[in-house]
Length: 331
Image 1 (tube, rainbow, N blue to C red):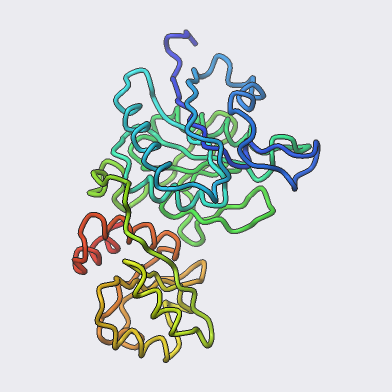
Image 2 (spheres, helix red, strand yellow; image 1 turned 120 degrees about the vertical axis):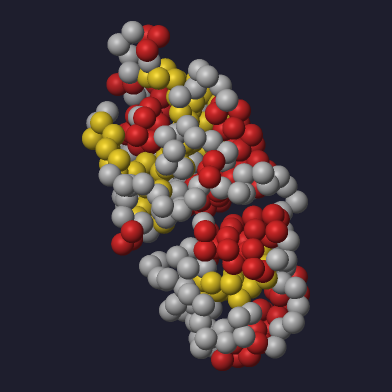
């Protein structure tokens, strides 16, 4: 292939296990985000002659420490690269612990049509058999494929291609750590081949009405985890302190009678969202647990993703409950 015909992919590093270092040959006891992504790219000679790479460094974080400031930086960078005629696609290296949150949020706020692919690793770069180089290779190939355009933010991991909206981390030890449960993956990779077999059906990226949000001074939203004998006083405290609370309920967004009584009698401004702590569930409006309609159902969103959407919706629409409900129906 002529060098002028090569696709140019921007690789944006944020840290994570893929750039982690520790005792040589060990999978555990490492520090995330230590290795520059150029070192990982150097270990993938198979990219030579197939794609041109430009590296951009945002930070070197453990993904548990990522913030809305980092999201704002990523948004500005990706939207600048969207306008750069030399860039054909983008790959973001990221820690796996919060990749599902970051991919979901970026899927809502990036005003882009070029492929944006996230990837990472479960083993550090200093392990005997690190999975990062293979994941990065496949992510770059996916970002190079025309089939990835207009699909929103994708996540490539272990040869599978997922939608950033639906992906969930299911395992903290295996290299096949991610899943989308019964909704399935979008496609797969096989060496340099990229096969997309279905498309996301929810609005995303350039289709989203949330791309004009300034990701700063965000509303304060937290998650209240439901269990037997959940403390109503803790929820009452959260309702007074935060702009929004997402309840990680049992079953299909359920909770004890004491919690329901508190919600039924609440007349404050804190926005309440009903979600579920289950990995695979649909939370609908409930005449049994929410007879007065005090809460917004999260449908299929996990509590952590529902929290991010509620933050964006509050920032965009304030306390307009009807518009916030429509956000959860749409995205």
